[in-house]
Length: 462
Image (cartoon, rainbow, N blue to C red):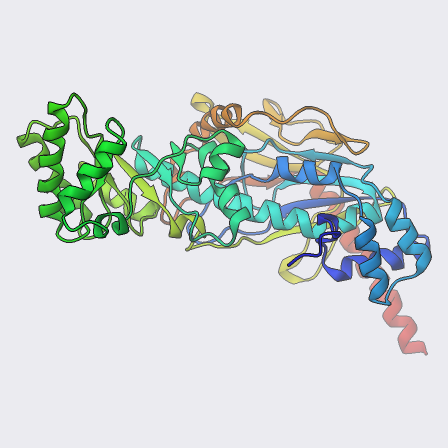
């Protein structure tokens, strides 16, 4: 259990705090810029859906250490009293440039840059990576399911299997943003204004002596919105029972909305169910499928022509089972107006504040991106993607509503070429480094090599 007097500001890797004290004691307190980006793609991915911006800005605006936080840090006996007093007064006073939440982003491109006094910017690293990594991974996974469903309704059923309540709430929001029809998570539905859906569990059926009686009881409670789960004992028998109760409902002026298949060979069972329902004159009753589905299973069912009208996806989407994390990093790119970079192996970084320019081709489809120095002019016909969203510690505009984000995402995703949307072995998107940024990288790399050579020479003389 959290102590009640601790705040979310303390959600920081401990070494961020020890560095902050060393910065403070040494007078290393000038402004710095940090870039947040994804180094590489998880398997079978060629794009990201940027998520987590709204939560990040909210955290930055309210960032402050509570008295309980300071007392806890003092009890560790690791920190100077003057530094703790400094922390108690600390607020985020910097600026943030970012892509739109829901934007399509690619590996190697900054999705967000923070400029602030170095201690402020450094202390944000843990929260920003945590939220943007999680939410981008979930939004990307959910977008793949919507693409696979090819217009069929998709619902979030993942609440019981996500890695914690917060992850479930975030998934519900993000999945709705990228096109899901709704969620089973009642809390998220209330918080975010998302349509909520639910059918019944097998336990409801087994609580009755007879499956048909269970259906009757549910239909009495929900005469115009019932969906019957038909696979508790024998799916074909369950469909027959559902048909019998549906006909009873029609006699009372009500209609069964759907049946749900939750196990077995879904393609074949859906075909059997559709035939049985149609022959009974119940053409309007829809077929809903769930049970261990992800984008690959949904794609296979859609491609096979299974007569399924909607899909409930849970575990594999809620934890992004095939790609539960991404290589999201937050790296310093300037200190005191001096561009800096990291040179170590496959973790090298690009120096300086940056801009991402996107050029579109025929039909408005994305054609190529250029990562450039922030000061560079845009290439002809290209659009700058990083926009200032926070200044002096305050957001520049209220966040868009979820419905506005949903509409905007649909336009963004429509512009993504089909070869990048492929669920298996997608084609790489064209992301280039500008000549200006490459020249800056080469210059700083050369300067670092000369400094290292001089240091080695001094060591040899000693």
